[in-house]
Length: 407
Image (cartoon, rainbow, N blue to C red; front, side, top):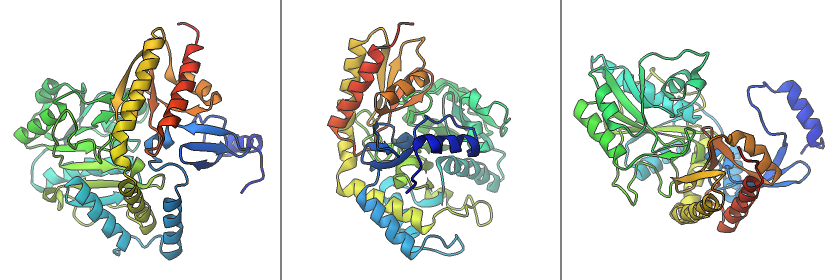
């Protein structure tokens, strides 16, 4: 433990950390469930969970113990060898998803990069000139070059160029997808809910329609579950059946964020048909599938199952929705609506308000949120959050918004 103050550490950070982020002037030191504390002990209610990462909250005793015990046994051996945790995690994820094969990496961007390469290499092996990917405006798939090229917000690509062969169309517009579905299309990639793009759930019938279009034209359907997977929407994966639709069968999905509760891991799950699309030597990851990360992920899956957390997310999400709708009703000059699913929800602000400018005011009030798009305050709390903590957080948000000057 450091003996330096927040001020001293922030000064050191300003000199030593690469300045590509704009972090809040807070020096966090420890957490507990949905709470975070700085080095002096000030408390914040964490309703962002590391951007939907800390699925079982901070410092969950079972997860902390499992990581420590595994670290004392075996942390890394490389993919030149099998390891027990890797194999068992692959089996558990395939059983939960209905898919057949698992590839492990370290992040959501890497998982989406793997799907990008998988789609192109699959058709290359068949001797078919299909390399184009259809993606969607407002989508976010990561910061590596392939994932960035599929990301549908131009500002993220500015100054980097991109990988050729990606076409962006409007999210929810099946007619636009059909119009672009030519013989050179390898795959469509979609998020069940666009998180970074503004917490936009897929319209009714959209995912089913994409599956039908891909089947008709022989293209692959890739589902980005980086933010929506591992219980975030009240079911294990976003493509699975909900109250409004049946299950949609993807050819491959990407996972990360909540999979290991804060420990870095990413995964691509595929159908058996795609098992030979990336043969030995075509793709890999030095740290991917290491025993420590896989143990953390297996422990998170066990906690979510044993404590009934996934089943509870739907009810918590509905309660959060009701609270946010009350804020919308009571503050009509500031709020424009609420949207989302499960514990991935957004509070839409009126035109003229900028969500990112409000985040520091919320932090001063003791609540941590993120922005999604320009006008959405995004709620992605730990899945273990309590209803009383949600009520505390929404009350603080209400107070801050009520004090904003008109625009």
